[in-house]
Image (cartoon, rainbow, N blue to C red):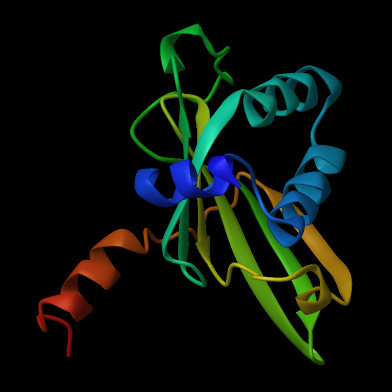
Length: 146
């Protein structure tokens, strides 16, 4: 109970929910062994998950990010994986994005519950069709998107 109260004041939870874990698992399974091990270590190092826009943007934080091993895909944003899955008969897609080589965000269609995921459609590593959702959300909140 005390953990939930503490997490509430920090604005998130200590861990990913079941649906987020399933999306991460799909991506891990598609990665080559060295990258898979690094991503799994990163996932285990997350100590705060915030869901300001739960179905569109979920952010992971590390207590000491500099101590968490990086994947070899540096830069401000690198889309590690595009995970497509079936949900209520429709195909939905979640993008897993790295920041400075560390997993940081789920973007676009982020499932809220494991029941939202009927089956995996496919995983595309390092897709070239990724478009950042943060600017879109900011525009909607400030009414600059038409």
